[in-house]
Length: 458
Ligand SMILES: Cc1cc2nc3c(=O)[nH]c(=O)nc-3n(C[C@H](O)[C@H](O)[C@H](O)COP(=O)(O)OP(=O)(O)OC[C@H]3O[C@@H](n4cnc5c(N)ncnc54)[C@H](O)[C@@H]3O)c2cc1C
Image 1 (cartoon, rainbow, N blue to C red):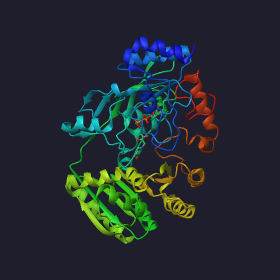
Image 2: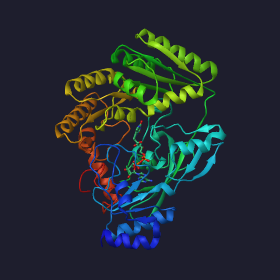
Image 3: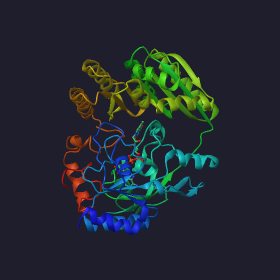
Image 4: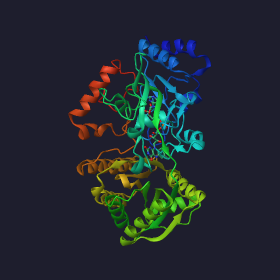
C-alpha cells in the first residue's frame, strides 16, 4: 500500500491522462500567493464520473492523498499537495450538460469556468452571476464557497448551487439536492459540500441557479477625499435598500496601479465603483438615489458608464486590480487578506486596518466588496526578506482578530485552505471539532485534501 502503487494502478486506468512529468507536477504544486510550492506525486485528468470514482477507490485502497484542482486560482494554498499524492485536475470535465432555460438552471461539469458558462448562456437571455474576478472553475468556486463583486445582489455560491454529484473517498457516488427551488428533505448535504474545499469528496457535477439578464445596466464611479466617507456612503446605501448589483471600494494606491495597468485616468483618490441592474427607469432611479447619498458624503467626479464597452472596461480594471497591484511593485509577492464584518462595523474595521498598514512600513493597498462588509488588502512583501513576511503575517493576524471582535469572519470568500486554519477554533469554538467529526465520518483515512480546513491529523 503506497502512493507509488496507487500511481502505477492509476496509469493502467488513465494511460497518458496520468502524468508524472516535472512540468505538470510543478504547475499543480504552486499557488497564486505566498505559500511555498508543494507538488503532488502525480496528476490525473479524468473525463467521467466513473473514472473519478475509480481514482478514489484506488487511492483509498493504497492510502494515497487526493487533491481536487479546478483552475488553481485559490488564494490560501488550498490546492497544494502538502502531503504529496494525486492531484485530480478537472480541466477535461468541462462540458455544460443541460441548460434548463424555463426552470432557470443549468447542469455543468466541475471544470467549466464561469466565463465559459456565461459565453454558452449568452443566447438564452440568462446568466450565472457569481463573479470572483479570476476565471475560476465552477467546481473550485463551489468548493471555496466563492463570491465576488455581485454577491451583494445575487448571493454567493452557497445561494446558487442547487444540487451536486460528489464522489466520496471510498468511491461511492452520491447526489445532493435536486433541481427543485427548495426542499425540506433532510440534512442540507449540498450546503455541507459547498465550501468544503475538497476535504469531503470530489465534485463531478453541479446544478446551478441562473438569472435573467437585466433589461438595463448602469455603472458609475465616484471619488472621495478619504476612505471613511466612502465606506459611510456604502453603509447608508445598503441600509436605505437601494438595490445595488455591485458596490466596490478601491483605495488611492489601488487606483494608481489600476490607472497604469488598465489605462484608466481616475483621480488618485479612494473610489466607489457601483452597478445597478433593472428596467431602464429602475436602474436610472437607483443610480440617482445612490448619487444623492454619495454626494451627501462628499463624493466627486461622478462618472456614469451605460455603454457595454465602458462598463466592461471598468469591471475588467477592477478584476485586474490584483495583477495591477503586483505590476506596480515589481519583485514583491502578494499576501492577500480577506475579512468580512457586519456592515455597521465596516468603517471601523477599514479605518483601523488602514492605520495598521500605514504604520507597518510595507505597502498594502485595500479593496473590497464593501456592500457585503468584505474587504481585502494585498500586502506586498519582498520574498527574500523574512522580516517583511513577519510584518505581513502580523497585519493579517490583526485583521482576522479584529473581524472576530467585530462579530465577523476571518474569511468572507477566499476560504480557509492552509492560511486561515489557525483561526478556525477562535471563530467556531467546538463547531470546528464537529467539522473534524464530519470529516472523519466521510473520509476516515484522511485522504481528501489532507492538511486543509479541519483540525490537524484528522
Ligand atoms: C486575481 C484574483 C481575484 C480573486 N477574487 C476573488 C473574489 O473576488 N472572490 C472570491 O471568492 N475568490 C476570489 N479569488 C480566489 C479564487 O478565484 C476562488 O477561490 C475560486 O473559487 C477558486 O476556483 P478554482 O477553480 O481556481 O479552484 P482551485 O484553486 O483549483 O481549487 C480550490 C479548492 O477547491 C478544491 N477543488 C477544486 N475543484 C474541485 C472539485 N471538482 N472537487 C473537489 N474539490 C475541488 C481544491 O482542492 C481546492 O481546495 C481570486 C483569485 C485571484 C487570483
